[in-house]
Image 1: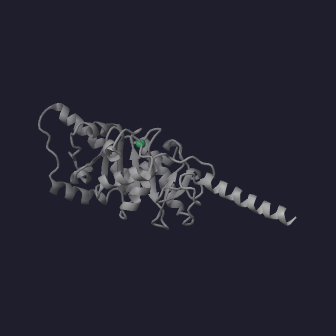
Image 2: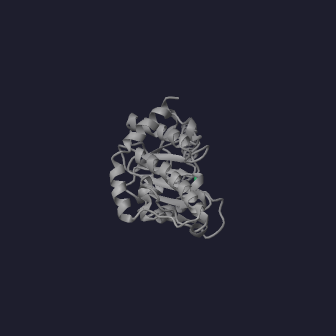
Image 3: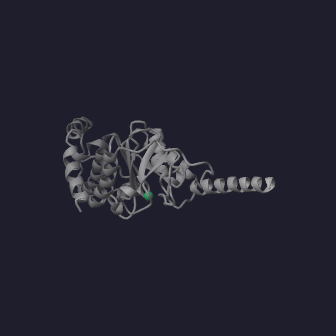
Length: 271
Ligand SMILES: [Zn+2]
């Protein structure tokens, strides 16, 4: 009898270990603990951000946006692996900075979630991250032509837009995806203190101090790229913003971001 009981206990332990391993297959460790429920307003804004970025042509069936948890700097919130336009509050999951989900409950996670965790780890000032395959930025990641601000809305680009080349970071051939922590760290290093980095042959990563700020920057990075290609196609020399003009324009426009955000959010959540 004693033997049977002991065997059952051992089986129980084995089952628990297997269940934990299934929940966190990458590390084999227990899932991270939760920081507690996030502000419902923040989750609503995260759902809105997903839909706005689709409406504005930054995301399509791919790409993702995350926000740092309002109760813990070492946790962030992001949807399960789902097309951004379909995201609802029920899809939002909590992750630690290793990008391990707190409570996966069988839900699939984005392969490139390490982009988010490693940028939050490297950049305490960042509270929201967008990874997109924003089409107009792609040529600037593959030609050596620098993305530069040519109008006031994209003044935040004035400090320079670094380009991340995964081939250099990995030292060889990959499937182009930032699918582990090492690649996420190398992307965060290339981003440095910039608001935007392009990813060669892939897309971009944009960071900001809030969801409205990162959505604003993502939208106007895409628009600036489109306008810059048009200006260059016209053939003459392009006049870009002077660094001083950019500094002043960014300061002025920063205070107006709630205006487009209100409009975009209303349209995105009104459907
Ligand atoms: Zn991607």
